[in-house]
Image 1 (cartoon, rainbow, N blue to C red):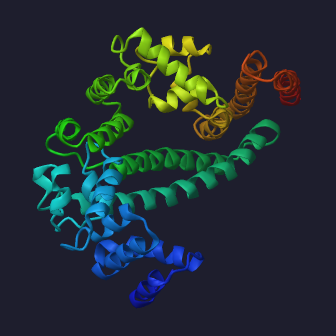
Image 2 (spheres, rainbow, N blue to C red):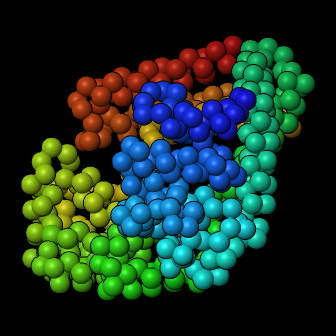
Image 3 (cartoon, rainbow, N blue to C red):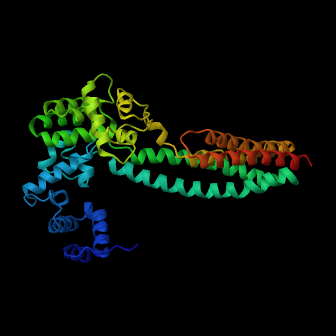
Length: 404
């Protein structure tokens, strides 16, 4: 897609309209602002014109004296809401690595990175982009080849003469899928991994200092750190702050994931505040408001709060897996079986039968589990039961067809 000339983007951002063309110009200007001071200033003027102080300060703070005090104040709160142990100040402002962090936000980043960002950040990002792009192309191509050859290979092994060339191609595609998938996973971790600061405790320490000198900013930053990685020290600080302000529900909210931090009265007040909201599932509201992590079991005194809500504890791990993934993963024996026939062509018939039956058996198990699940509606449970019965007939049909 060709770039819009900079003067045209500046002119669009200067208009008072809010149409699609202005929104597209805004997005393109943001993508190019780190390399164009002219576009950065145009964005700052645009946001000031529409009354968004935080974004006006975000884009205009790099120009000495341009941003107004209220814009800087709003921008700091916006930025602190994105706080993490990584280099969040430079990332939020989209600052080039060789540009100095503006003095009004320099206190929010590690002193090591005020004058200059991490030396290898751009190189790592570039290598991550290239690696991910290549891995995606190879993965898609090899997956298509694997799917294309799995069906004919197994069909021939079941009912006709096994094709050695198709089996070898399926094997090569399977190996390529596994290797490219591993490379893609490694590339995504490299590309998405935040640049860690040399002082991992700097963010928490600075948040605690702000809580004393600028309480509102301190609270926002502590909440962001809890949201980012469940920082227990940040949780304890928020509990103590809530107690000083006589807000027991807030103390229960932030402290219940830690064992023994909150009192019964605080947990009771927190449960009452959740129930007063109405509408949504109380367990889900509890997990969302207390920022429970999806890769951890229910921690601390959360089960006690859930009991006060009159609901079963919401398990964060249960929301991290989509039910559809299990059905797709269950089909893995098919391409594996097709590839395996390349190693043992004499046993191709038995391998094909075993692969198909293995998939049907796993699907049958998923249907049985769904049929006996108390979390599903009765009609869904009946549908799973009928599916399990149909899969039993399907296994019988495969065995009869293969025996001929």
